[in-house]
Image 1 (spheres, rainbow over the protein chains, first blue to last red):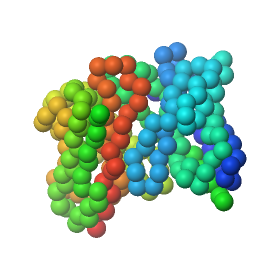
Image 2 (tube, rainbow over the protein chains, first blue to last red):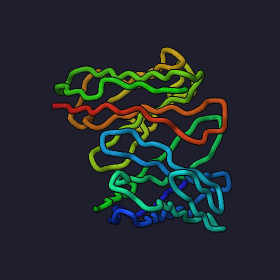
Image 3 (cartoon, rainbow over the protein chains, first blue to last red):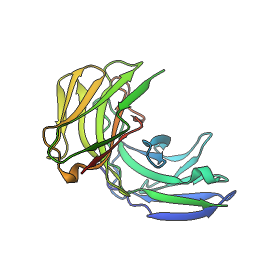
Image 4 (cartoon, chains in turn orange, blue):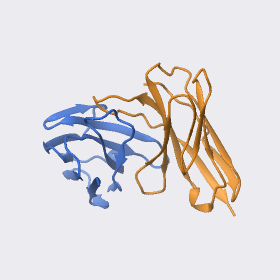
Length: 112
Length: 114
């Protein structure tokens, strides 16, 4: 499984756009990039997943350059409730199981 | 819809006592099941995963064991807890048939060994 590197923490203010970048230099051809969000004392929850270019859903956008060695999670107009830890994961999609490695993640603090 | 139940939510146990955490999934069949542990302020560490009844893979050798007695039941156990077993334990499931796009997590059990 490819190792990921992301900032330990980030600060932002309400209403701003937040971009969290993740490096995954050893990403394999079959690997997908997935982001999770975790609030204190809760399990992580899926935010978005992509393979290349751009993916957008009602929560966030995911930008993946052509070389796929990094990815950027973009949260538009964050609110206080977006304060959480965000994990970048890289792994294969297959029917044999979804083993994931969660690093320390990025702690996002949204201030009023 | 699928749901995952994990209990208890919090647990305080003395050193040397046994442990049994239970996780059940509803609304799906033949899920892949996982146990993770999270130390305070740290990422999640995969402890065990299972792709079927009686099939357990251990990722980290330790004082814990896992069992899957039924298709949608996953149990984390210990015969004698250590102080270092304290942490936030999370159960998760993912689809066993379709290409996996995401894992769904339970609410977690906060274990404090005293």
